[in-house]
Amino acid sequence: MGEEFGRFAYLALLLVAVGGFLLVELRSRPGQALRQAAAWALIFLGVVALAGLWDDIRGTVSPQARMLEGGRIEVPIGNDGHYHLTAEVNGTPVRFVIDTGASTIALGPRDAARVGIDPDGLAYAGQARTANGIVQTATVLLDSVAIGDIRDTRVPAVVLRADLSQSLMGMSYLSRFARVSIEGNRLILER
Image (cartoon, rainbow, N blue to C red; front, top):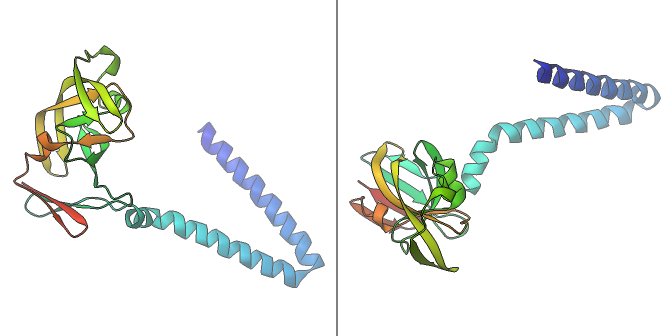
């Protein structure tokens, strides 16, 4: 309630200030004041339209994967030339890079913490070779991984001690699909 009142008070004060300025300007230079008011109204409408269309614009700039009929997932290529997919891991959305060079699902420490795994409490007994060199890994079992209607339970993965900009979806998970193919600029996953 207090936060809403603060916002209302701020907007009321802003409206009084702008309204007062417009009244003073209308008396001294009515033609110019009306043109400026119209320009600001158009800017305001443009910002409102941009805010309302933001999800559509973002989907065009950074295309999202689509679930199609029959357990088919279509993943468009990203602006960086990689295929990105958001999956729910233990009920939490995690953004992945689909990496056929990775042997398994690899979570960075931040994503691991977000899905309920304490990265500091893991035993980093394994190693993985990455583009950035050799990193220590800890084997974990994810309760669930879901992409749209497709849901898998008890999914093996590793947590990397080194941070990743995005977690990796590797071949051990991709092999659960009957078909993995590239058609044009789309990666197709089918169950």
